[in-house]
Length: 485
Ligand code: SAH
Image (cartoon, rainbow, N blue to C red):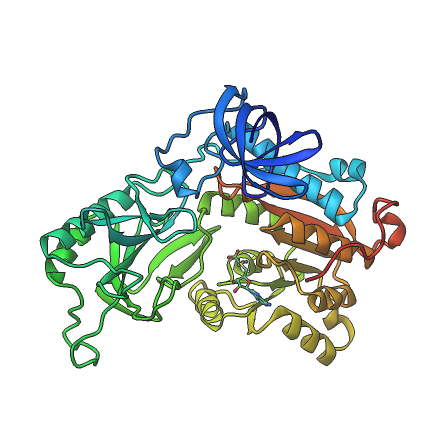
């Protein structure tokens, strides 16, 4: 069945949305403002997925994707849209989610929304890339991306959101594989040596790391004393070491039948175990397994905004929940009295402590555990002023904060809460809970950390306790209508 439809909205994954007689159509690769001929592929009661057959009138915001494989790769869903329109879409997505899912008054949210933080040059921004290695139809090794949710690899030439050195490094590894007849890992048979290549660069330091994930078992199944993991390893090392900026070459052993990329055993075969990078004046050590924000230029701006919202004068007690390797915690430590970081992953906490020590920061304490357990435990044990911090910062994963964590935050009653979020739907739900608990939403600022994808980061400031009357909720929004899961 085919229709003519105008695209009037964009869905969460960047797909175009159009309506025909109240029926909703989702169309991949469509841009707001396009008039399209589409054919229905999968129909449900109220909506359908449709295929873009023909562009009747292109949207004024439609541009030609720069990357030739943008459609197949799926990493950049919005490469067909001008960057300005993309920023507008992301800002309105945040605004609409807070209004509709959080039940806030639309006029009030418009008054506290600050302009989205975009990038001046939204290309080559990623400091990390992970490429699966496989074989093409002719059996030659290729590096690329899995097509959609499949297991076939689309060869990537030069990914335009990654660094230029990625291609140079991949070319060295692929031609070495060809010359030495080294097999790529095949998922279905679990055979073959090279599984993935991870590349990271410190944008401030210029240091580059390459880590090859290998399905390596040596014959006696013991650790190889000589550290020879790849045929012709010395030649490969020499070629990789000649790449400008290269400081660390390692292998990660992963022999499991799993789609987890990295193995836990890592051996440095040349250079250092980690690269260094500086973020907001603090030096971080980044090993192949460390979590580190992938867009350093925007991270700097996002943290800058979070620090502004925290209004630190040098004396404050600050909690940073979901702190990772302590990037926000340590950025705030210089301007605060005492900072506490809480994070679930033990390795990240170790990194955070090491980073604090190597930067001479003595007023940071890190605790390992779930925020929803560490915070209530701490609250129970403390008395008096100690339980009222000045600021609590949260930066949770997509599912947002746990209800117990929010509940304890309300009991601790900090003067300010700074909420950094990568999912505006769970952000909306949590803002509503905090405002129901007496906080007032003072500012909302979206930030584009992932240009050309549908994702958007947001930082919000809440101050409290303001009392229920100041919550600016939509009066018609039924209380408790948000769901918690
Ligand atoms: N603020 C950091 C990391 C943010 S990512 C940065 O900007 O670099 C979110 C972090 O929350 C991850 O490091 C993840 O491991 C951690 N996390 C996930 N669930 C958690 C929980 N229940 N309690 C504490 N930390 C958690």
